[in-house]
Length: 364
Image (cartoon, rainbow, N blue to C red; front, side, top):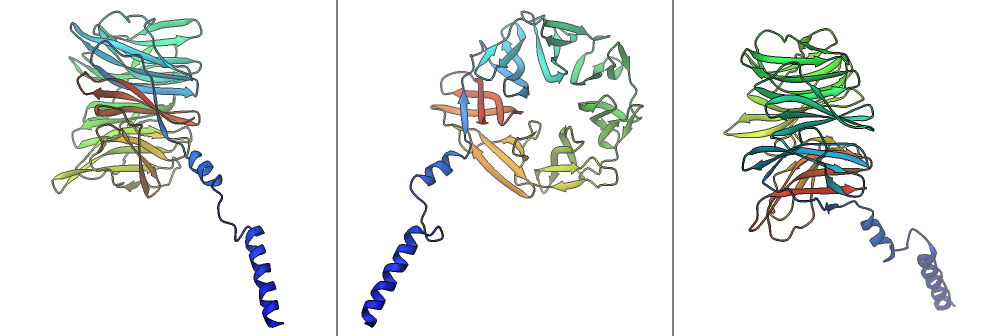
């Protein structure tokens, strides 16, 4: 009887192991689905440029509109380069004013329903604007020797640079241009970004080193950001919520290391500084991804693949782009969020040929 009872108990336990979720092993069909749900970088075809290229910027309004700007190194000088993503493919745009002339294209900004792009057209500065009616150009009030950077929001735009008399900050208020003064000791501005007409940020080379400036609707003032000692800045990322992220490099012990500083945007909160394991990565291409983490391209240890860093709080992880046959250098230059995906744009050098344009997408 005891032997029969033992057999029955074993049969009951065996049946429970088959039907109970706590005992069930993952099926072979479940594992591949979980793996497939993890987004991967994929290559997007881009029409080739005719000469060596430099990518300036990438901006995306959503999954169906992105613009990549830059210039070609032609035999007679620099020539502007512009590509458009329509949600399905990249195409070359040559319909903007000055497309056939010498010059270059800089930062891409979205203002209302328009896209605005800084354009150096044969030494004369202008802002290209594209609306539903096509392209137009907004000329700058004066010619600068150097057009350093550009920012635009609904109701305001800034262009910073230099002429023979020194630093110039030009602001457009929707009706006309005005020149703005900067605090004493500022030599030149290295970059600018804006969130609203009354909130813009810039970083400057000043008498006491790198300085962060903030436009408060009335004047440019020292933002009193406690930058790490012996450091420089690469970029400022200002988000719609008011959160601000600064990226740069700090020099010490014979080698630079990347730092990130964040501020919530709320008065009274302090700046927080972190040092993610990125080495001496240049942080200009940093972007907030659709997953809420910060993303940026980093120097790859594989010649045939790009490499990206994902920074989520104190955790940094890395991912690789698709394998490119015979590639000897793959360099994403700019990142942008495009709906539920990340887009990158840059250059790839294939063995035996010049570097040409490339694009990759994560998710979407």
